[in-house]
Length: 391
Image (cartoon, rainbow, N blue to C red; front, side, top):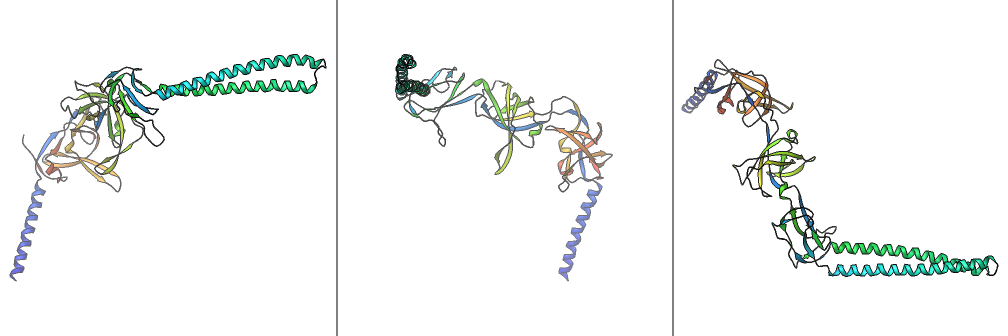
């Protein structure tokens, strides 16, 4: 009996506390922060991270195999287009060229010899033709001479073809010899030097990558390469302005503009999950004194709206979002403050920045809304009594 009375007492206390709590919240949700609906210039933006890269950069490799006999630059050296950078041992290639040149000369001599023979046979044929017409020379002898002339003409054409083949082989050998000398294709800076004198340069094959000799880049072509999330890429356009902050220079923001947006997305790892992003390239308009170095990590804010138009807006924290996943719908609302009562009001939102959200419909400038505190906003209901906090 005593246990039953104790249990009943506990139940009564719980019910009493619940009723008191409900009564309190029904009478008032507490003190709230209230602000007037105003207008603001909203510059909506997209945030992304990336790195600094050279837009004009050339990785030099070799097309021939050989020992490096000379490297004429060092890392960080400035080079000009056409400057000799590296020499590969050319002894074997030089000998091949000499052999091909000799083969060409031999073919030219053979052609000259055959043409002289053909000219002599043609003269004989002309004399024998006169004799044949007068009936002095028999048919068989004349036909044999005619065949010799025809064969000599064919031999000349064959030797001419052989000469063309020899010339092609010579040009190929000269081309290979030329590839033992590596020249700079652009004006720029030696950013990476991968090979030294005495090492063997190896050309690429179908399944094997060749030796990297060095990398030349134009230092004036530094750009920012960003990974923009697929959810934001629709708001980004070429020509939009951006602010870039290098991790190494957090207090020196730089200005840039969007130059390029990739057509297709690429996958990247994000917290163990696969995410899709688009490459966006930005060129600098003002580096603000920052010493730019390739590979630097940066954060960028791309301003997707910068029209300086005053828009009806409220603080972002004042807006509530309700989602109906089954209908794929989202509803935005705020709480108006009307004579000590919270009135839930559905609104249509527009663009936003870090602080304010545009309100297209549902509110008028000058109306009062509840903006906090968050712990009260989360539990607020339409019709709740509230008190405006002082100050």
